[in-house]
Image (cartoon, rainbow, N blue to C red; front, side, top):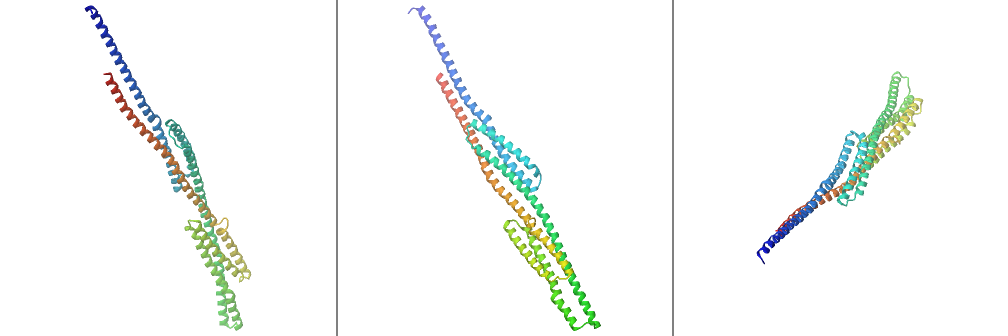
Length: 367
């Protein structure tokens, strides 16, 4: 080859090599850039998932849990202290609406994050939770009204008992005065000699067979009134239906004993004043019996109080079961989000490591 031909060949060959090198470097740069962009996109998706889906999802689940616990705390504080109870229906309604909004958000975000959670069960438990609180509020209001009624009826019973005792006291005092008057008259007649042995015998017989037994009957009825009072006052310590039944049984026995005593008394009060006294005593006893044992009496009112309290306690047990299930579902959401975030962090770390290795190998290959 001539010298001129060699000079023309070398620049052409070098130009091709340089062009190839530049093309190769550009291609490698493009490959590295594409690889970098692909890995950055994967990292960005993980970050986007966390910021736009899982983080709001976690916030919604925690807000729902906090709502549930807060309304329960406010509910029991209100009914325990008797403060702002009238505001509870509105609060329950607002909380239900808020919980529905949170559940809808959780459902939407959960679908984006592909988290499988039984939100239908959560929605059902939320409805049951609010409904149970509403039923407990009704039971609480009923218990408060029944307690006020029971207090009024107990006051009416105590008034009726005082009237009954006063009637018996009046009878007892009248008989006692009559005995004293007979004794005084007999003493005077003996001193003046205006009486006979037969007359004294008749007076003594009347006292022993009529007057004194009547006085004893009146005094026994006063004792029966004390037994009735003690039996009814036993309601103050009653906390259950069985205890109420036992106290009511004692009261019925006391009233029965008193009724028997009145029948005995009626056979001894035969004069006009006695019959008037007996009628007043029987009427007061009838009214007393109604205030204690009647359908609108003390025991019926206390039974209504205990029924309302039992309903309230039963509602609390139901609420506990619902809350455990409800919060269990929400805890499942929180756990699923936590697992998803952990996977996202692990995947992001793996992507970063893999991207470094891949880009480094690509650069080395280019060299």
